[in-house]
Image (cartoon, rainbow, N blue to C red; front, side, top):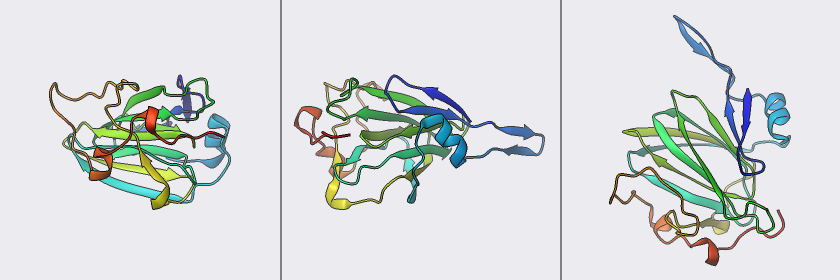
Length: 185
């Protein structure tokens, strides 16, 4: 694995070493030793999630105020624009975001440690998205930031004048200024 630090402390874009020939390809999608040496995270993952979304679906920006989840995310079919937002109040990058394209073709992953909100926009006809989490989902602790919060100023790659397809909970997400954030992470 090759780890690329991002402007947000603790967030890494990860490229697996891919071995391919005329038969196809092989790569390790996860190796605990390699992952720990790249990211510094040596805890465990407790849950794997898999979603499928149509073009224009935006999921996020999600986080849990209790049981914060680190996420290792990747796309196995299609393409998404993936975003992490630092919501650790005492972080030097509080309120800043990082976005990148993840696709089945580039096979890249993004490590988002606890303390960040996360979301993605489906760019292809559809996309299948996999992610490992460091803690269990807790419905009562789930929160959403507004995808279009002007303070965050995320440049989602949407066609001009087109609003992404959002879930009911994401339509009522809060702006960062009003949201619960992490005080002690």
